[in-house]
Image: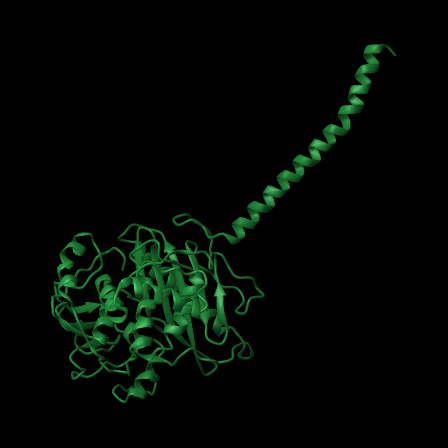
Length: 398
């Protein structure tokens, strides 16, 4: 063998193991990245606006397979079962006006209302009334107010929760805690107490995009909120009459469908379309409360809220189907609060001939002497009061 041939042979013997090693390392890197990609796609929520197949829960979950909304983040809660995490359930996102559920929850904790009770008077301050024109120009969701106007606590909560009035959130915060900052601190303290560890409130209305929470945390709040009789009654209203503003309508157009009785809508450019829904269903003779949350639904300002309502409705139906197929042994029948019809019977002011609301969620309305304000409780309600043209119905943040 010549010197040159010997050198070539030595080089091949040296490079052989190196080449094999490089192949092994490259394969390991590729495999790791494929695994990471698969893991991320399995745990991360899809980006809003992207077409994705509906994710499902594992077959060994407490309710078997559930189809979740294809966009955004979602979670659900069922009394007697607990919180069911959907895609992105623990990811903090802006929640827009869904934040007002916590505002109402704290107001009723600090100033409880009996069923049908109007509560104390809240006086609108001159500065709050003077700020209204500028707030309206920016497109905030508002109800008109005037200096010295007096609203009952119940009327203020109706303005907060039905037409999603940002200015009423600010007025209630001042009335309860003296300032918005002090009230917001209470919101965060209450969130920690309820186990909402991934929630951070920065304002009482949800108008700020820095107010963030998770679908799972808002489900926990929704279950707690529905145990407050007055809050459950208010979010079930399709409309109410309040001073100055007149008739205000509920943005939750799903009321009365498939047992849905609340809770709160929200939408803006930062949060997308958001919905937190409560529905009562029956399983083997038990009233079961379903709370479903889906946030970050895509669309334009005109379509994102309808998209969220549609996604939330489909989620409630999916949970209803799963409950219908669930054996009685897997459901304890434990309630989170009372059915709205039960709450009315306790008050002695409202009654239902059947002793409870029908499956569609219909509840009978208060009579004409309902402490100065007229309400509609879904299908079969009294004749509607004519809508006031003065109410600001912004498509932002509702």
